[in-house]
Structures are given as structure tokens and as C-alpha cells.
Image (cartoon, rainbow, N blue to C red; front, side, top):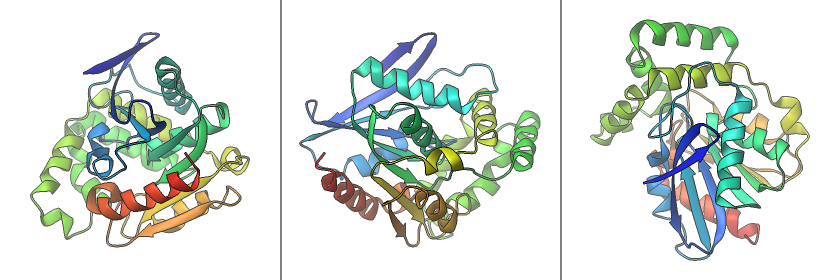
Length: 262
């Protein structure tokens, strides 16, 4: 178990791949942890690349601090972890709230990020009113109160009939309440349209055709803010295409990384 103590917050992280390889950093979505990337990392090149993933504050084995969190706090967590590990010029892959972290980090520390993968994310996700209602529901009924509605937005109907589906529902409902609420506040308070439109670095957007949380048009709109960006749609997949279609996800990611001569 790898734990980084970063000025009072301890983040759980894990490193796979080639220890001397070029770094690729992965940031998870709301209600998941670093296991989100298991299937994809298993399909990525074994040499030449070092894969770093971590549990976002309030998720997995990382610490939960009192809510609310700001997006700046989550960006600073990623920044401090990368400084702690001594990595720069990374390909940074973020999904959902992890993709928001990616946008903020690239704007703040371009030395840390040479290329972005914005997966199932946006410059702004939903509205403050929607997030306020979700926060209120969790305060009353815990994360379980959102589980069924969230699962219907996250996964295709076919995937929801599989045995594996239960694992992802369990992962979500076991997210610490404080961490879930804290990250909801961070998303609610984030609008990166102007920030992301100012970025000038290689960017790949990935969307799932059946994503009910960040629909493909929303992901494309954000990706298109960055001049010269690429966009890829994974069909018959929802909010977590790295789970539902890891073969295609890994292939597209590998091609993008290779195109950066990373």
C-alpha cells in the first residue's frame, strides 16, 4: 500500500508498468476509486510507460477531510502528489470529476501536464441546483439514496444485468459520505469554460454513447475548446467506458499516448 502524506492529507496511490517509463497519471470519478482503471491498465503497454493512479480525496483509501471541498483543493492534491513522486510532463487522464481536476491542473502547472485525456467530463457538469439537491439527499439518506438513479446514468441496461455491475454499485455506496458530499461541492462550484479554452496542449476527449451523466455532446463541446483536440466516441458504453469497453478504451488511449512520442 502506497500512501503519500501531503501537508495533512494522505492520498492512496499505486504505480504500475515500467518504473523508468514516461509517466501517465489517472484520476478517478466521483463514487469510484483507483480500481476504476484496473481493466485499462492491464491492457496498456508493459514497457516504456509508468502508470500512476490515486484515490481522490474522500474516496477509496485516501483521507476524507471535512466538506465542502473546492476544485482548487482537488487540483492541489494532484499537484502535490506529482511533486511528491517527482514526475513532470505527464499524460494526465481524468474521468468525470477527475477530468475537471485535469483541466485545472493543466491550467495551473503546465510543467506537470504535457497532454490531456478528458474522459466523460466537461468544463461544467450539471447545475448548482442539481448538486444542491444531491447533497441534501446524501445528507439525509447517505450515498445509497443516489445509487439507483446514478447507476442508470452510469451504465447501459445490458451492463446492469451482469454480475460485475453489483461491484460498481457497492463501490459507490461505500464511498465515505463526507468525501462524496465534499466532491459534490467541488463539481457544483466549477466552471472551466474560459480556463479550458485558454489551454494549448494535445487533448483527447473520450465519451460513451449512452452516458447519462456527461452526454457525448457535452464532452465534445469541452474537448473542442482546446484547439487541435481529438474526440472519440465509444458506442454501447455509459459514463465509465473504461469499465464497459476496456479494449477500445485502452486502444484509443495507447494510440494517443504514442502520438505524443511519450
